[in-house]
Length: 378
Ligand SMILES: *Cc1c(COP(=O)(O)O)cnc(C)c1O
Image (cartoon, rainbow, N blue to C red; front, side, top):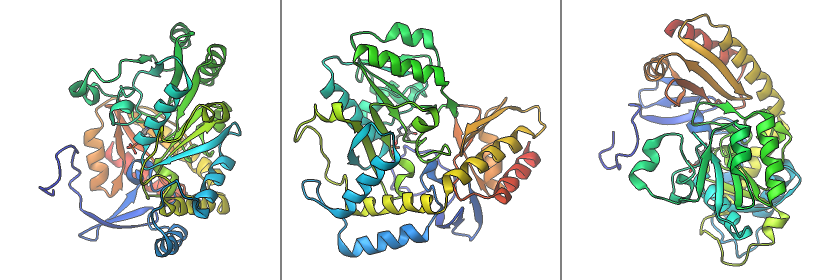
């Protein structure tokens, strides 16, 4: 462990020096099957040739360019984002991370509405900067040292339609939800819950905000909004969008866009051509290789194989596309540690969930390796 790093991260005890495709390699040359991809970032695998080529070309032309200038690479990426997301979303705000995409969403909500109250879901995760953190309740330890934070956020139980109906009224500015809760254990919303949120927002002139930072490109669709067939007014994306180059995106509908003004929100690096080039290359690669369909098939196969493991330790295998949870009847830590020893990287979620966020290029043989290893460990 590097003694120069601030001690805010748990440590894996691994020194990784390179990656290729679905594998990463440590300094000893040991190979790991990467089924976590840095919390869902490397969506088409490490060191993807198409992304590398786009980044290499861009880096020789222009890396950073403030959004007060025009740029074709950025324009193309923005256009692509509008093309692949729900049709009512017509503008993009570009930043550098998931939490920034949520910060922008919160500010846009408050710019749009005369109200301040934002209804969120218990156990939701939206990031750790102070605004996003005010909406993050997946673990009490995240908020506790920094309270009171913003007090306009009111969490209700996820998938609880009665509580949602009681919470949303004429004083509500927005409902902010993950369509599938990631950090708290890959818990998909019911369609009825999201539909109810959509209807209540319409009835009360409140905005529906979907945090798709984790679900983006990962559910067998471009977005979970499309998986559910529900259109948010604001959508946050980040993690997977540029296959590892830092990026954040906040998509907004026309009526939200009309309430924004110059200087109200900005950031220096947002929309830099380097990230935009990587983003376009990532999306194009997924399109050209039909990876959404492939990932859906692989996800179904992975969940089915996990479900067939016979072990009293397993509570449930669940997920959508390649957002997959193996929910245990015990704490996850020992199992994650064993998996790592056996050369497989997964991530914790909640306290009992082994979470898999593999790249879309995963094949059956990789799933089989993971499932066989899990059988041994369990
Ligand atoms: C990871 C995540 C964030 C925060 O993204 P960062 O890039 O880590 O700031 C926000 N929302 C959701 C749903 C996430 O999974």
